Image (cartoon, rainbow, N blue to C red; front, side, top):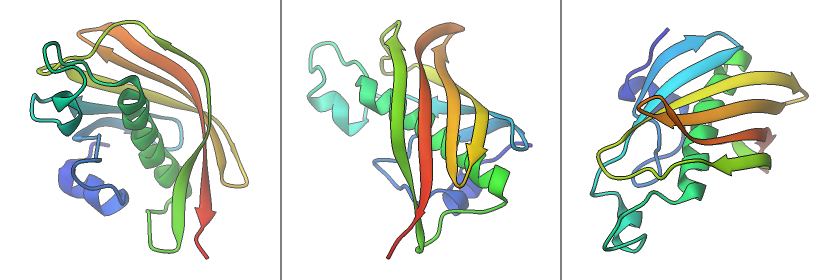
Length: 147
């Protein structure tokens, strides 16, 4: 299964400038997702990180992976984000940054669901550019009701 930006906007609550997934290339129900983030020169964080040599902040790379993981979670639960629930980071383990991501790069987001229990999800996540790993990490996320 694939998803275009319109499908993604129906599933995720994020909007510009914080939406980090442009397209879902593959989605294997409840197992894995492969998504795409086009990194453009007009991303707001490039103004200050770093003006003479723009590099995507590591935290934004992890956020892109978390958003892909959220899409996978919602698929596994047959749900979507709504006003009564939020999807939170619960943990990041063994994050390793292996190469910088710069304007013009296409970041491929590969996320595999390791396990889920009581709306807590554990993933293995990897982002790559041109087949080279940019970042990989274990992610833990939770879906919680908003009071």
